[in-house]
Length: 337
Image (cartoon, rainbow, N blue to C red; front, side, top):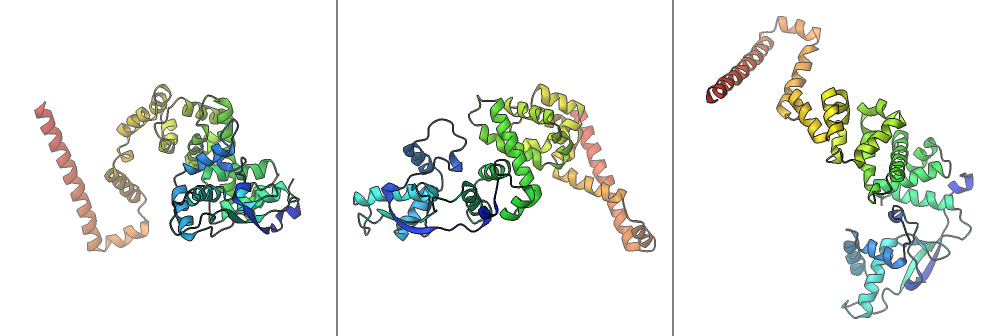
């Protein structure tokens, strides 16, 4: 349960620490989806392989140190700044080997850190890191943000309203991220054979973003069915989820989806509705909808305005010409056969 003191500003002390003394954090959100033992060496290898690590390393080398101090606990575990520490380890090896001209061999041996007092509660630390990586300038990937928000809500009993206030996020977004993460975890538990389960987060995220699937989401039975569809490979791409409401609303498309996949279902839908695939027909459809609800006051103005009538006559002329061209092409096609 979160207490009032957990919401107070976090106090830290500045410490100069030997680089070798610092330990990477096995509880870092980037490792939470990985099962099995995570050694410091394994964590370092994984962070070094991340796409932004090498560019950060170049920045640190150019500056001959860190611009921002890592945050550590009393056991010298790096709570914030694991990537920076990995970069320093890499640079330290190169400096000691004399591979960095103009940089002394002991340049990266010590690190100025912010140390959190031993008595600091787990909740306060979680809130502090959430503020940095959810509300702050260094956002985590959305999966990691959702995990931390879900943890604060589920494990530490923060209400949606309080999380919205603390993290500077809309309440609807907070609720969505908690729901999406919980369904992703449920998928993981249902399909333990899927080692990439955390990548399915984006599918559930698209499901919860789609307004047309609100009724579908209300029943856990449907959510489990959606999980089955993901595992069975019914979606060729996460973006296919955005069309699921249309697929489920059409009996033929739904049957094709359940028997085959979303690609086949969309093929059937596109045959019935060209606006799904054609930008031009989408525009025509918008024009039809506009004309069908044409305001009476505009009709009244048109009666006595020749310029308006001329535009409408031009519209009719263009439609007639378009239909004429279509019929001509149809006749040519028939003769060709």
